[in-house]
Length: 142
Image 1 (tube, helix red, strand yellow):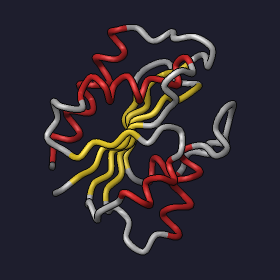
Image 2 (cartoon, helix red, strand yellow):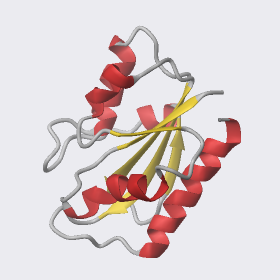
Image 3 (cartoon, helix red, strand yellow):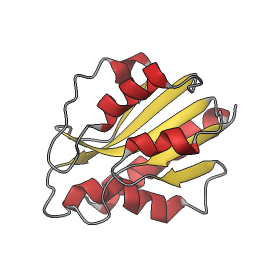
Image 4 (cartoon, one colour):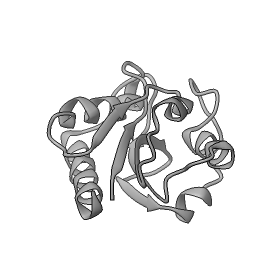
């Protein structure tokens, strides 16, 4: 199964930078297509090449530990935009699924706990755990 891993978040907005930080650490280490999209998940529409598996890496507010959700677990989230995002990644994902002619068959979300837009509160242990989870999800089928 071919896959794409997309990383979301601001480079400078506190914990929202988790996706960018993880992307920078693993961009040359994982054998999958990796793309950093900033805070605009709609960019996915322009870069998608028919991959069957999509892995989204993003900071998630309101969780205490790194999470992995798959397919319907993601679409059941009632996420609404906050702070710097016009739409949350989940809202954008739901829209994209409806409007894109081709869409990945398998979708994963690796969520990194976020507490602040103003400062980084992420610790090294959390980042390493997220990287291990991404590697596990990617290596499973890609």
